[in-house]
Image (cartoon, rainbow, N blue to C red):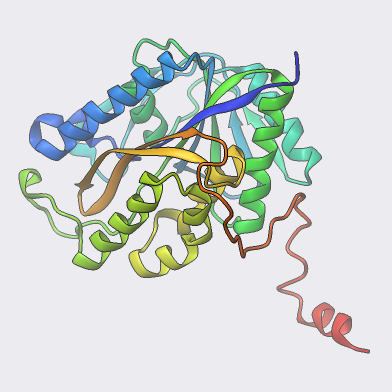
Length: 312
């Protein structure tokens, strides 16, 4: 390959199946479905030949997993919303690229592996996202898991590893963060037609994040992810924002467009499009650390080792 691969754009899409399985039950869910179809049209028009998805619904415990089965075909039921039925899927994955990602992640100090066996339960978020973004399986995809225990540094390094793989492959890729914004669900049954964001505070924080994303300020959102998560119970502590920003280059140089924002069972759900636009945002301050390799937990749970290092 030429080694000049790059991300030609990025997307943020919902991680719940309601827009795909039940758009007729809520006007907002239907609008999100339309927004995701429009985002899929944009992916195909961009000339992208690969989508790389980071899904907060695919939770891993040890390391990072990449979907490496070229044609996963099975079915899945949402663990929280059985009543909306079964998602049958037949996906198109780029197995060779997944293995390239595994190698790139290991080169940066991460524990990573490919997953490829019949009947592996592809997560609901990925299935629903691909079902609306690319129902005809026009563009091959790769899906990476969301490690439950990964901190910001590890997640940034994961994003950079994926960027390494894209560059080395010569591909034109779109990065897709499959995630909620605020992630507080209603804890009682509601009439789907009366769905709303769980609280005014969550809604206000969601709208602030979307305002920044609409201005193309992806790295600013990544830097604010911790505070957003504290205030609005951000999905998986905002890991999808960390991954997306790192994969796409950790800048605010994007043209951003919010294609949709609606509640899904109390959570904040949005469809956002980001197109690289060099020097759009000017000189900005980035305050968080920017690791290049994952160096482990640095003995944060080992008090004796930490004390020994602090002794003169």
